[in-house]
Image 1 (cartoon, rainbow, N blue to C red):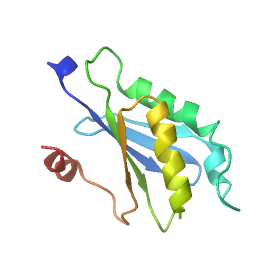
Image 2: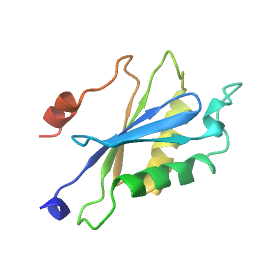
Image 3: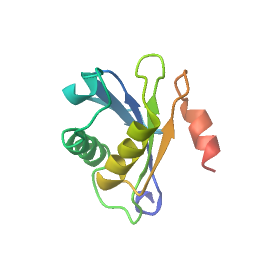
Image 4: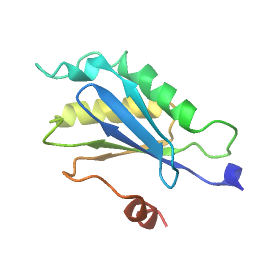
Length: 121
């Protein structure tokens, strides 16, 4: 039953948008977030990013579950260079947006479902 399973949401953070999907699912959504595109310096205002993450999480997981989902935020270091301070604030924003735990990744390549599912077994 789905209400007894913890879901993993994979979110790719791009220059001006998020793409997100549930690992093992076939539905992908995209949300524009222009606060991400301001790369002149470190992101200081996460008040516009957090509601977008919350919207993404709630849209991908409609219905009831006993377990809050986990999230994996993936930042491509070539396309979206990020500082350690920003990573910590992104993790905090994701947890405040409705996930119980947030993993962070800065791998250069995209994560595949089979690798992610194998990692959490």
